[in-house]
Amino acid sequence: MIVKPVSIAICAPGKRLEREHADAVQALVAGDERFDLQFHPQCFARHGHFAGTDEERLAALVECANEPAIDAVWFAMGGYGANRIATDAIARMGAAAQNKRFLGYSDTGYLLAGLYKAGIGLPAHGPMVGDVRRDYGTAAMRRALDWLADGTEGLEPSLADQPPAAAFNLTTLAMLCGTSLMPDLTGHVVMVEEVSEHLYAVDRLFFHISQHLQGIAGIRLGRISDVPENDRPFGASEEEIAQYWCAKAGISYLGRADIGHDAANKIVPFGLAGRGA
Amino acid sequence: MIVKPVSIAICAPGKRLEREHADAVQALVAGDERFDLQFHPQCFARHGHFAGTDEERLAALVECANEPAIDAVWFAMGGYGANRIATDAIARMGAAAQNKRFLGYSDTGYLLAGLYKAGIGLPAHGPMVGDVRRDYGTAAMRRALDWLADGTEGLEPSLADQPPAAAFNLTTLAMLCGTSLMPDLTGHVVMVEEVSEHLYAVDRLFFHISQHLQGIAGIRLGRISDVPENDRPFGASEEEIAQYWCAKAGISYLGRADIGHDAANKIVPFGLAGRGA
Image (cartoon, rainbow over all chains, first blue to last red; front, side, top):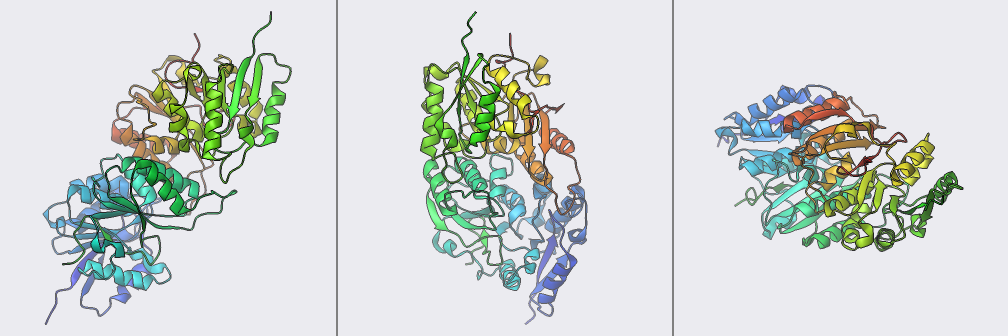
């Protein structure tokens, strides 16, 4: 039996991808007829902070989304920059984008949010190509590839019997709140994770998002990793922070989520689709 | 002629004040019959990250605001924490708070915003007691004291012939947007400043605030100081960032403002009051 491979287009809406990381992931699927990975040349472009100018990143993303022969769009890296092209990219997406899976997290959350709001494709929060560089990065790649090929092995465990969900980097979600990219998350479980932020900043971000998320089903806290040393202790743990602001805002705190800026980052499809049969 | 001194109460809604900085400011006004500075003991309290627990900081602020013998409330320090007590503090403020001046910036912007929204007193963005530690800190203290005694010498120059104004630290404003503390800034000139943030973070914050500030008279950019070294250049200056997002959002970019996390930080009273006769 000949199985048509899943064609996955890779582009970089924010930071550029190192060629060696692309090569490592390409090597992982070498000889595996289930996957056809197509790295858009824009992944390796440079323009100041970004993987090419806004116009280059926008054009590459729209090309990947609108190509009928492509089944899924996998984001190469986070970094910063997806918010600068998200609105224009989504406006240009056509019929071929409708059934594609889109996978990323961190800064690409602006795109996941906007796609979900626009009802385009199936956006999910999960590993990106550049995560191959992490310890246990190979496992993250296998998890991502499995989901991009309609698998369910890497789903975040609490999705098993839950309301619709969405997941975000905490800063990204805070910056999304109240903007034209923000989807209606009423009734959703919202999972958040953060990296390299002081606990006082996490507290400040929870102050902000908890006032914007009225009507959600609840919040789950992913990993808050690589918290920098501060000159004085904050005085509350990350979970106490989440519980404090959830209680103030009348939002249910539902416990931990298995997501984070690490190779163990599980997959959270937005909404209810993408969880298998 | 005997002139009644201006009684100024000092409390610390976020970070604690070092005793030596209180002493330095007290020494500055020693023998000056125009000023009576009253440092609330809470300024020097410690609790984790904060100048005392939420309850202690809240109680001190409310006490200073509601004491009829006090003419003005001067915030000791920024840091982080004012947003944790602002809503409760404002709810407890009584008649004696109505005519007081409130002066601070940075993290105390949550209080300035909430006071302005509630129509309580005369909040202004300007130097805090802890700024005495900076180079030229004495000039900042004299500027603050002048304004607290109804002077106009230290006003931000563009206020001379402008619409109502407000000024914020950029992160503080971003966290305020869409929350219950956020005042209606329609028709206002909004000035922003930032410190110790990467330019990509400044860009991200402008993305957020520009979508929330529809209907304002325009934005003025204060100083963006102590930008950390990044592993790659951002590719746009702070002013290009402000201009880019203002243009996208249809907001007038009005040029620079003479505010910042430094001793030159000029005073911006919220609204139109506090600018002299």
